[in-house]
Image 1: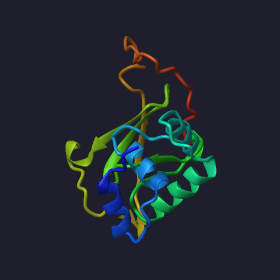
Image 2: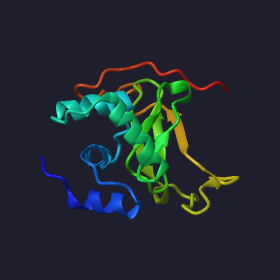
Image 3: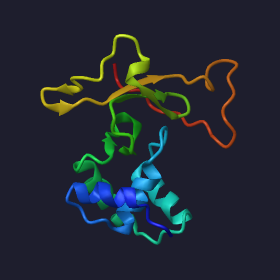
Image 4: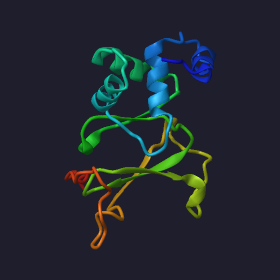
Amino acid sequence: MERPKSYARLLRARGLRDTLPREAILQALDRRDYHPTAKELHAHLLKEGYDLGFSTVYLNLRTLAKEGLIRELPGGPWGAARYDGWVRPHIHLLCLSCGRFQDQEVGDLPGVEAEGWEVQGFPLVVQLALSCPYCRPGGEAPRGRRRVRVQAPPP
């Protein structure tokens, strides 16, 4: 499998070795609206032909998140942590019915600025829980997507 040079440069710029597992993870996460758990990403990489163990995927996810190349989204009441390759400031829209994540550009929301996305020195991750257009009355879920009940956070 061909290894894109841009991922190697990103890794080296952070002082990391450019290994095949790291490049495969970055490539898989390099798209919007894809926020897999470590287990889901591992299954995806196996399906793509990469012979990687789960611990290799998990440990590299942690390293890449620590270095700021990807973002780890805390699982909280929604289950396991999820990973996001889009590290620019943005908001996650989470459907409470089917569990679908959607990225929303900060600039698309009136009155929301990309500056100052920290609270007392901690990076701020904004996730809004709502019902997606597919789960609202009269909406139709996309093909192949099954509805999953997601527990809402406590009030």
